Image (cartoon, rainbow, N blue to C red; front, side):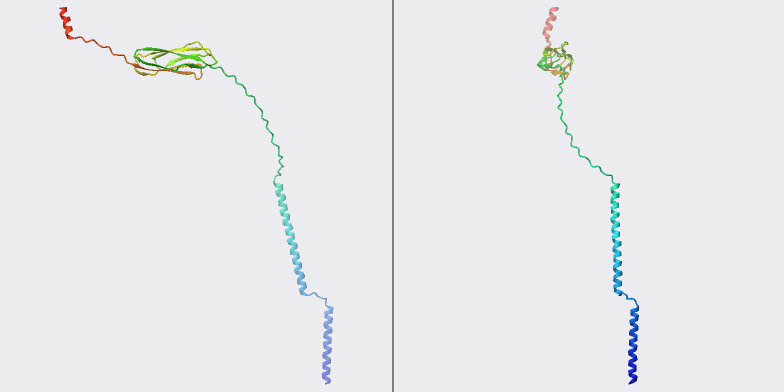
Length: 229
């Protein structure tokens, strides 16, 4: 029994020594933070650094975009503001009409421009006088006259005809060697506008009747011959 008691006492002393040594070791060592707290702190630090880098990159990108905008502004020529000028009202200048002095002109007017001489026999000669008046305000000059065929012959006055005065142009038509419907024309040239005036003739020419030859009987010829004997 004594031995058992000694053993129990020795065991208790050993336990006391071990607990004492452990407490000394724990007191000698510095108090360390738990591992979970250290990990969380390191994670927060890493996240904060990442965020800082991200913000720095964003700031740099903004600076780059701002620089590009500034470069574009410098590259583009600055447009000067255009001043709006009020439209100038045009004043209508009333031009006075220039009075043109009319140039004096002669004008010829015929009483008749067509003459129908009717029906005549071949070889007949007919005449006609065409009366005209100068209705212009300048002297009338008859420069000349021409016929479409040699059968008609015009006669014209060569003196100037004053405005308001009248005169005549004579036409002689010769139907020699003509037959059927005839339509000769007389072209008058003067200082008028237009300068040519046309007079027209019309009619029909019949052929001449043939001469009848006298027939001599044979009895009359015999009688004449007996008398001569």
